[in-house]
Amino acid sequence: MTRSRRARIHLIRRGLLYSLGLCLLILLIGGIGFWWLEPGIHTLQDGLWLAFTTAATVGYGDLVPRTSVGRAFSVLVVLLGLAVLSLVTASLAALFVEQEVEQEERQIERELMRELHALRRQVSALQDRLDRAHGANPPPQEPQ
Image (cartoon, rainbow, N blue to C red; front, side, top):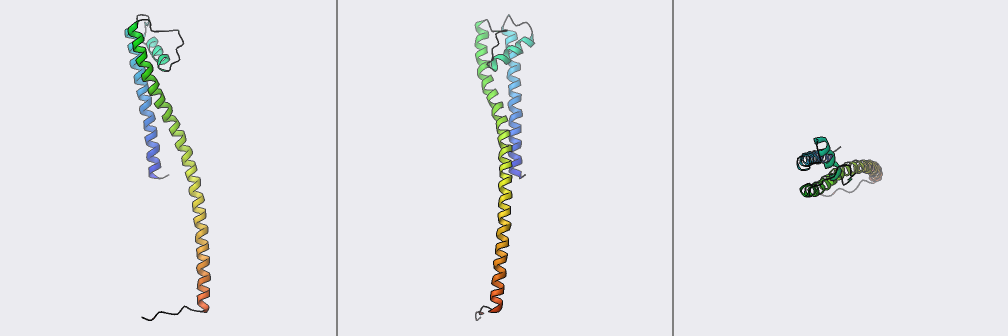
């Protein structure tokens, strides 16, 4: 694996970790926000659940924001959640695509190396033929 490929995979993995970390941070802030803003959310666990279902746009309906401030906050959680979850999905997809592209590149490299070896054998055979032909009739030497 070349250095640039390793660097690309490292960046993709690091991007995935960053986006997962950002996702967890948004969910944590969302959970704390719902727990603090909504009178019907009594535990942090319920706030985190509401933040997750809101950010993922699942909305099971078991917990919902009731106040206007909670609903406005849920809009923010939805927008941030969609953006960050899209980043996580894109990072995962890029990781899988990079691995597939790497396999294709290795296959192309092997084929090119086979063709290069075949060309070297052909050039060597042609050189041998030229050497034999000139051995019978040496080329005239240029005067110096």
